Structures are given as C-alpha cells and as structure tokens.
Image (cartoon, rainbow, N blue to C red; front, side, top):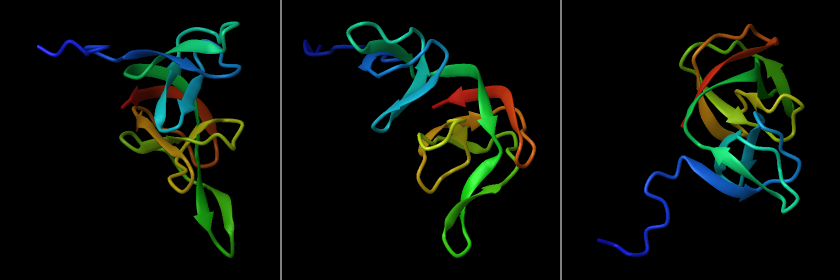
Length: 121
C-alpha cells in the first residue's frame, strides 16, 4: 500500500482563503466548496468539497450581445452552477468566466435570487 497517501477521502480540505465565513461558497483556483469554518488568523479555513448545501443562487448568466454582459436566465433542477467571483451573489449560471461548482436541486426564477439546495461536485 502506498505510504505517501495524505487523505483517503479529501472531502474537507484546509485551504488559504482570505475573509471566508462559515457557510460561504468559496473557490481557490479550480477547487470549489463551502467554508465550514471562518478564516482563521493563519488565513486558512476548512472547505467541504462534497455534499448538499443551501446556498444563495442568482438566475443570471454571461451572454454575448455586442459585448459580454449579464443576462437573466432561469435556474432549473439539474442545471450546472458556477462560482463567479466577480458577482455579489457568487453562484449563478455563468459558464463563460465562472468555475464549475455543482448542480441545482431546486429552481430559481429568471433574474431572481433565492436560497436553494445545491449538490457540490
């Protein structure tokens, strides 16, 4: 058996994330999850990478008209959701510049925001 195994099931990771509060959706590079703890004085917090969390989701997506702008779209059950650091509400359908975050388990109306269950993946 390999002796260099660090984590058998890396569902929780200790990561450096500035200003995270417990329950916040977060991303470090391509690693996404939900902060389980507030960022400590060492700049680190525990991030959960799997599970179902209730998170604030916005029904918007980046669309191209004459330039890239945000447009209203509905979120449906099973839709892919993305972490978008440029927005106040971090979870939406912005595939253009967002990082894949998980799947919607409930719906959000076009242009609205709501707290729904999200399956992390």
